[in-house]
Image 1 (cartoon, rainbow, N blue to C red):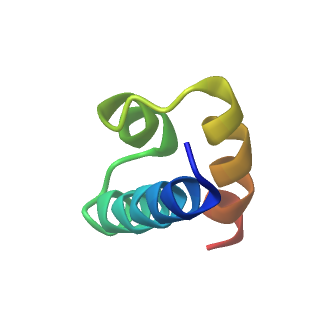
Image 2: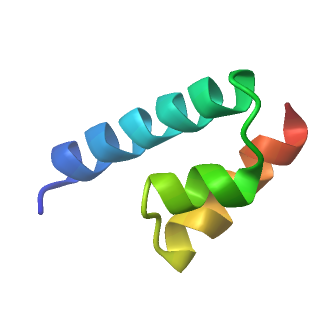
Length: 51
């Protein structure tokens, strides 16, 4: 995987997490729906708690 693909993938997952949060889903439900692995959950958990 190239850096471009991983950055694009992370951007899309961040936007989807923000959308799901706005729709009323909690972090666990959102991470499960997006099938995030543990490293992705760790990276996005900080952003979730800040908003």
